[in-house]
Length: 433
Image (cartoon, rainbow, N blue to C red; front, side, top):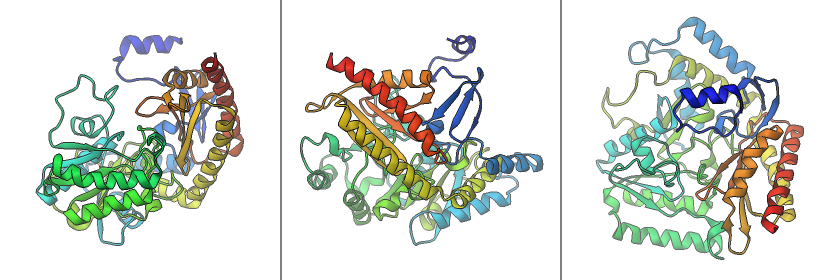
């Protein structure tokens, strides 16, 4: 353990977790360098923040230029052009052929909180429906929407009222049912849910991740997502798509909802939006976004000039460097390599993903699908010691997920996955013994 880690433990509260014991010196593209000048291939990307890569020169230049002009006058006091320009671009880029408006905030959790506020104001209804396995943040409301007790909820109750959970299609754990059968069963169950749990005319919004992030990169079908859209339309419910982890080219589209042919009423965005400068957004139908009255939404630092400048540069980089296409390429390469590993290692129960948002679910028994939580932890905790950074996820903490910067080279990807292959061999051997 480094001296800095010892000092961290002395000075910093224990609750903020650390995946690694690396103290970073600098980062460029998909490579992190620590204070001892050791390099690491980064498959975490700041937990999905560095889609354009660490310290992209265009983003750095935009931040520097903005910092030299003005840093924080507060949008509520003196508005500035970059806030409006970014809103105009997001209104145009997000799915849906209808007039849209945007507000900016500081974090993903803030975006979700404000999307719920907007939906409640617009509908005059209190209830919100989220999904089992979903993750929406760590504030009181977003923690209430989230569906994993440890580490997110244990001991933090009571939670916000009028939040209801509905099952998300988890095809790998569907007890032999086909995806169609799972979808049909869940869609039918939603009608029963509206009878037994909460009346549809009591529901302001249904919030859904197009790919569950912390839930283990679980991907639903277009059929299921389109059914949620129809049910929202039928009952006057606002559909909120949480694209905080999936947005900005990550899945091989600018936004993941495009894969399903569905335009939500509201979208929450953050993470890779500012390439590391804190910023989030709620984007949606103009008439819904304008439901709150003047002064009812906002925040001192919301949509800061530095963040808006960074986000505008991010959008330019995605277009100029064709990162949507690059995400598709990386995703195809990862899925191919991971599928090959699945054939080699029985501990891999499932390989799944969308674009460059891929994961493997580890099990000690493929038939029983027993979660391999300890083996997953072994891979993550030992990978960085060998020069590669991976993350875990999943309701059962048995998923290794991959969120590489979209500028990662094929050679870097292959080197990183070579380490993954060695670690899988180690944990496979322990399971067999």
